[in-house]
Length: 297
Image (tube, rainbow, N blue to C red; front, top):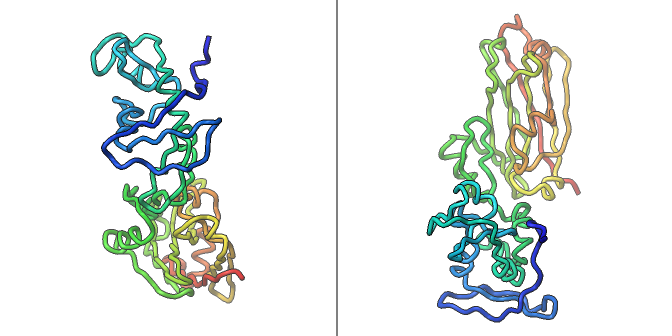
């Protein structure tokens, strides 16, 4: 009995033509055969599940009339073909699985700059890590669904979230909170910096950690982690003749805001220390955080 999750072998293949402009594929030979070239619209029609609209992978299911559906969606439609309503049973579409083996397809993000071509069964793995895939909006407080490249997100942050943009690599920010005992989980501020040809996000937050109010500041890089490692930053907070300094490497916005916060990768102050630095009667939070970003040589 075949393993229902196994990949099919190579199919005897020939060129499939159509009216649309075909994908450009490498000229290399796979197992002695040239990969099939299919127009984009034909690929979508052949390998897209009619239920979830995702690409189908083995075991691709087939009804007696020849309509196909992905394995995960079979149970969702109660084993009934969504097109003809016939019982799907356990028929596997080996011909379509073998066809997919012969395909080389462009990355889903080719319109954003990725020029790579991939075998059908490895395409998704690449797309999960493709450096051209869109970034999520880095604003921490709104669960914003907007995605895009860096220029798009910078414009979005300024226009929609009203985030300030500063064109320098040093900063001197003052954070004031009238009632430091009332810490919403989470309250925050966000500032953008443009320096060294890149954009950075400075986060400052108040939240509860183990029931105690804490304040945290950290920097994220608007780009890939490999680029973020080329920079460093430091943060400093102080008062009453004392100061506390943090130095680190900015995290890529590929890492979600909550992931960075929960990893404690930044300057963290307990409320008692924050109030000490604030001076006065310690009934009002007045923190001044200074810092800078620099490029490692």
